[in-house]
Amino acid sequence: MSTVAEAIGSALAHAGVRNTFGLAGVGNVRVLAALASAGVPYVPARHEAGAVAMADAYHRVCGEVGVCTVTYGPGLTNTATSLADAVKNRSAVVVLCGAPPAGLTRPIDVDDEAVVAALGAATVRVTDARDAVAAVIGALRSASADARPVVVFLPVDIQAMPAVSGTPARPDAVAVPVAAPVALPAKPEVDALVELLRSADRPLLLAGLGAWRANAQQLIAAVADRCGGLLATTLLAKGIFGDNPWSIGVVGSLASPVATELLGEADVVVAFGTSLTEWTLHGGRLLDPAANLVQIDLRAEQLSPRTDLGVIGDAADVAAGVRDGLPATTTPVSGWRLRVAGLLDGVRWEQVRYADRSTADRLDPRTLSSALAELLPKDRTLVTDGGHFIGWPARYWPVHDPSGFLFTGVSLQSIGLGFAGAVGAAVGRTDRAVVLATGDGGALMGLAELDTLIRTADSALVVVYDDAAYGAEVHMHGRLGIAEGTVFTDTDFRGLATSLGAEAAVVRTLADLDAVRAWRARGCAGTLLLDCKVVRDVVGDYMVEPGTAARPAP
Image 1 (cartoon, one colour):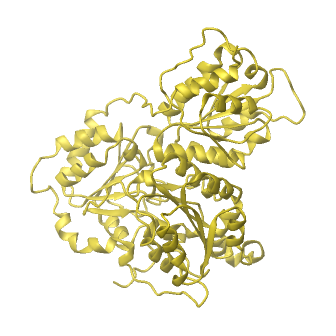
Image 2 (image 1 turned 45 degrees about the vertical axis):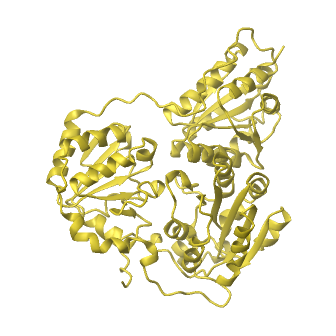
């Protein structure tokens, strides 16, 4: 007779779970054995935070529920940062967590459910062997439908119990995305938005990750065509409009000077599926104070205080209603496009001039990023860690669509999840090479998962922007005299990477990028790490208030 753990493993396989991540402990070894027995592939992480970050990244690049497993106590508390990040990413992640037997209280234990609740994830505790499979399958459904991580606590004694006869063995496939029912947007709000766009002189339509998840990009572009508006994206929705000539690209902290200027000129801004964080509009300070801001979101609590008109509904439904309410004509309502057409070439960062500050043995990060843009694998998923360096790859390296751009830690303002995110991305999209950009601080913080990436990825390029410092802290707070805690000697990332089995090269000049050309000539096979020594005194303008820096010379 099979055990409860074995029944769970079988149910997960039949539910369509194609990959899992985790780290073994006394509380979940039976779950791991059951997954292996059921034929569900498992990626062993080196740290529990990495396991959850892998599951989060997996979901974000392929859309399936990310499943991982850890043990209780320190196994769970180790997940805190990546679990909190997954919550803020609104990712469909299920964590199968071991739990001590009911009634067992030890001085070393912590209140696991309180920890999870404090991070904002949902919890399910199995208390009866008869409910175990249903609880796990229900967690898969609710994680997907509610866009929220769920932690399922599985007591070790229940895992070992015989599976109850009659427990469903073949649930419907639920590892694939399950959309929650969404009410249609209220007609008065949609009509009000149509009237705003009819009278707008400079309309701008801004798409966030919610627009991508709703598959609304073509509808939003159609609305822009009818009203003569420009298109823009948040950082996480980078690439959503492809090569649309009327897109000004990313707005906010990482916007080009021209994009920032055009955003400031807009008299109506319509935001689809974005919570409008400080990264995007800086509390509305990037907008003309007289501009009307319209925000479309599934949840009222996501609306920004700056919003003038809120529309609760699915981004695609709202865009379709607005499109149908605008006249279908070859002459758009607004003539803004004609007036700014000459500026649009300047929205690309490669058109923005700068003074190259490379030295004989260290590169300007802008020069490095621009050169690498031509060398990256064509089919790729770009993953970035957090840190001062992030603006350079995000600005200079194009992506095909938002599923090909994964910014780890952005929702929680954390660093150190890059290697783990690259693992999840590599497993979720095996048809693409994974390209990871990380700083030296984040790389060292999450170094354990470099080993996992080397073991797991068929094709991975790791670019370490190594300024031998915690750059953000140096540039933002260096005046406080904390250099001893933020500035370090160079790290030998090449030696670390090769000791783990990767290829690696130190990059001090552009000629050293021949290592990438050689890797590409070999079919981009395996993991190549570039230890890129960059100058420390090039400060990203995104470290200061956007819009305050002088516009670079044309």
